Image 1 (cartoon, rainbow, N blue to C red):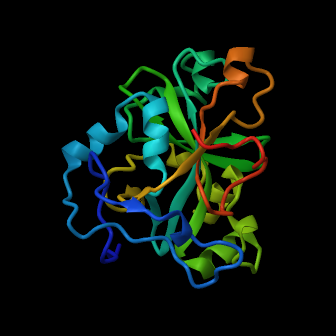
Image 2: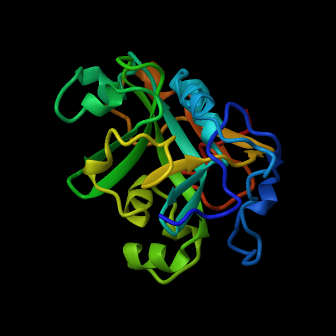
Length: 240
């Protein structure tokens, strides 16, 4: 695969914050997500270390990072954390054929099918065997817009294109076969470094009414503040 210049793989810590108004919004067709700093260095050991922490710590650190598959690059704008012993996490079922990838090492992909229709991309968190992950809920497009539109079947550059986890999987052309893929290695599907947002929002996770009350109400949803590239409901998000 031809490498795109200007992107670096994830390191232990981002160098600069990303202004909230630099992520594309409905009324700003020219603004684009900021590019990662060229001063960041590639280091696979640090990249792996970045992911192998508690899902609740990893989730906000993924905001602003870049997802790349071939010509499509997306900037992560919204995520949810799913932790060990979390009644909303797939890990609660133990290791099964479906959930085995979530028990893999942090930094791998966990892609599952929701309602038999939507491919949901998760980033496995923590050490191998823990069973925790971060769901990618929304993104903003950085490059490959035509490919994204073709895969999504929508000729638009508005947030509806990528404001939902199933839309992310579709935009990236993912299937469950991508589970266990190491996201810190070059090629295929990878996460690249990007500046941190200046401000973020937090709120309860979406669609987990089946979980225990303490997990339903936990503020484990994180989003970049000041962008429209986030999913509904937006009124449950607030500054931390």
